[in-house]
Length: 420
Image 1 (cartoon, rainbow, N blue to C red):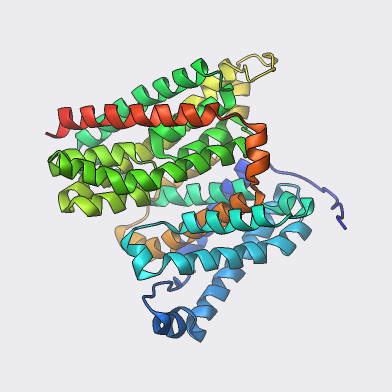
Image 2 (cartoon, rainbow, N blue to C red; image 1 turned 90 degrees about the horizontal axis):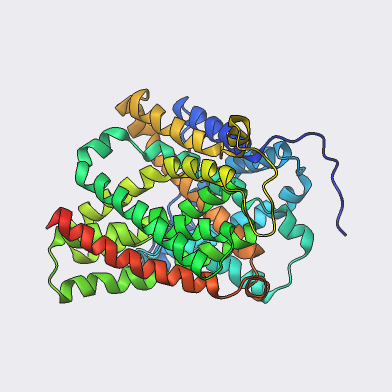
């Protein structure tokens, strides 16, 4: 039986994310560096003696005791109470650990399939094969978890690395993002896709896939079910692109630098970019990572620009413009978690010493991946395909595929112009 929890107070979710992200970073820099659990295995013996060993299970347990209070604090600050999180988070964590174990297999690693894919699949299987109670879905904090991951992602965006990467990667990222975003938005408009979905599709295709879709959803206060739809499209298309694009490049004998720039600018997930670049060669891997990294850097700026655009063009389906686009309104609609992302990037670029960075980056990278995986498990659990496709027509899917096709062609042309 569902019980209602008394709502004592509430802080905006984006500010909660900034607070929790700052706590994690401060604890790590202050010396509380969590050991990273091992999920790598190649056979049954490895699985039993390494991953499922007492010491590694203890490390996984300590990690749970670290993230659980943060999840509870997030729910409390957001006004949801902690009862629902106490009942759901342990299961979400266990399912996420199972996904991490599956993704740690050497055969899976050879394909460079990310843990979030397994998290999503496990969640989707449970969410679609079993009828989960409404209170369970209501207690999930998908956006909270993924935004914490995005703030922690900022600790790895180091400006000196961007400068070392050279101007070509940034130039390609800028040209591709602008051209593909506007084309995708135009296609969505032609197919009569609502503006909210159009924004998320355009950002996902042009910038950096899932992270961009989530950032855009936060900027426009988007519907979570529409966001799930877009994320599903991103992940479903990333896998075949990751596999077939390197072979297309090999068939036409593209130079490695061109191939790397093409892969980095076209494929929407970082893991898939690394996987495809590895299939081509060392130079392709380096260039593809630089280009994808450059696109990721544009995430904060894009979210800021989108929040301003959305404020000035608040014309979501059936909604009239009721607020004047004043600076106050722009600030209210601005996704505050982007400030956390940018602050983390600036902190680790100009304040944190390289020595400290080298000590904490492994732990922070692990926590970043964990929060993302927890979010994707939650997305799967709360997503029911029958409900999803009943509420959304197939037009967004057609728009996404057309825009992705345009992205592949335009990025290839730009890659040849800049890297050949």
